[in-house]
Image 1 (cartoon, chains in turn cyan, green):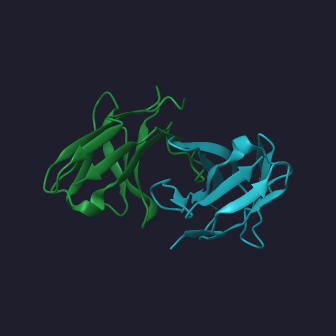
Image 2: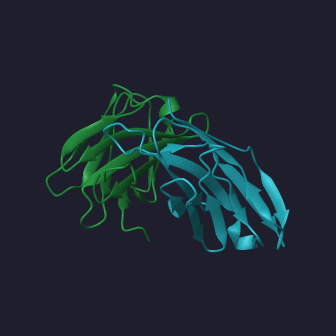
Length: 114
Length: 116
């Protein structure tokens, strides 16, 4: 079945460092891809999305490009801030079935130190 | 604020008991999804309703059930609770199912269930 694999955390960075969180997927058909963020004690918020190959999603300085050839959707940010500390989830939907349920990766904890 | 509300925020109960979690979707959203977030299983899809009808089931136990009412709010019922049911339960909503699989879901703040 469809699945998402993302890099284990925690990822600890200093402020203004470059961030990459790797995400790869296995899917039949043409899924949509998402990054969700979960701040401490809160629910999930959609960070960015891409609905077809070569699409680039971007928001708040974060970017991810839908790469069909490598089945990847890596999250990047050029300069992280302390306020970016959170858990990041890669997800896909649109598995071709009757539902648009989201399938999530295990989440990556990002800790940014001042 | 996503516009999705969930009550209660926290729930503490004992093994063997039954609880009901409530979700109100964003205004105009017809689809409601339930997810469970636990340390060992991660984030897992439980069940989806669309305009009052069950649309899909995921890894939902037989002890769990859900429904969506005419006003589109949804309830998740968990019965014969076990210690392992302790988790964060999220509700999400979306406008409708769009062809092609694109589906932006908006999540509520979750209900944290603790079974003692």
